[in-house]
Image (cartoon, rainbow, N blue to C red; front, side, top):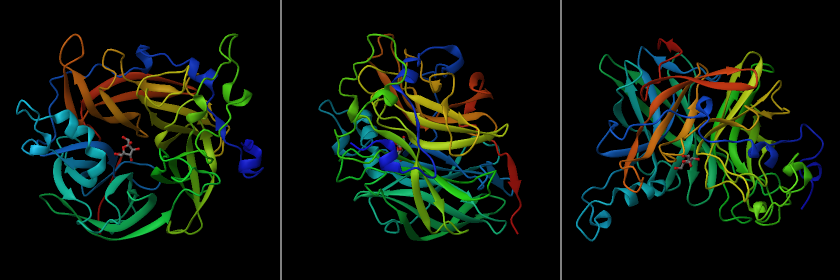
Length: 424
Ligand code: FRU
């Protein structure tokens, strides 16, 4: 395999590495980086649909924005099938676990609104059936563009392929609620190139998704983060000294960790509207450490770039592990170098007694972290679980330099606005 310098060139930057040595510092159940236990008695947002990835409406600078006093979130959503024979087991019971596990294949973008930043009311589907060019509508970011209520929804069009796309529409409010109008013309933006970012042809398990556009507070330009894997044929990646880092004697064996090749990608817009993008080398790579760095996003605080990304236990490489949750890295400038927060990268993980209680965390600039409930044990042994498909309690973290601390917990799905825009 080519070295980073050969693959990514000398300019404009070299990716920062999340090393195996960093990951060895990840420890579940540290109370400062562990999400409080979620009770199995949680309320569900809807008995008709499952929701998971939650995407609060925001502006290009990252501020969570309400419109005319209405908070708005977008969610990946799939129908629940309690009466569909396909999901009835041999005892005549609804197999909710199988229904839930199948959700990714029928994910659609829906929106919800609220006066209180919680108790969300279902608005409906953002795009009519047939508008999106592929079967799956996967995660992305809704951006409020102006006081006319124009919204650019960046998302991932998946199956066939995986393309970062956007669709423009408008948010309309009344005294009684919110609707999304337009969202009729989906514009493909870019796909993995096989040179910096792995393609499906190079690896059928590739990841290329989850666009998160933003304006850099320092240079004012429009960029976009996304999830990727480092380019190259599956199994061809080398886990060398740089990827291993400074490990103690006995920790040099990397096993099969060459199969784990996650990265956080970045692209820069060539225009002000965000219609024309150029991919740049990844900001961060996790070769030999983890195979998925999903839904990457930033918090800009104290003149620093706090880069957050979600990851799983099952996507860790041989010899390293950590909880499902959100991980973070910090740099003084956009292109790094990034260092793992808390030494390890772990910011907010599930407790080991409830390893799947939540996922898909999004850290907002006010320190609040939203996520969804996946499954929560209902008995001591953890063999019986209750499937969520709904909003988890919001958690607050404090970010201080290179450290983070869990400090508070709020209601389910509490996503208060940071600013309100009055529509003209
Ligand atoms: C995170 C995620 C995203 C993806 C979506 C698919 O929960 O895996 O990366 O866009 O879910 O359902």
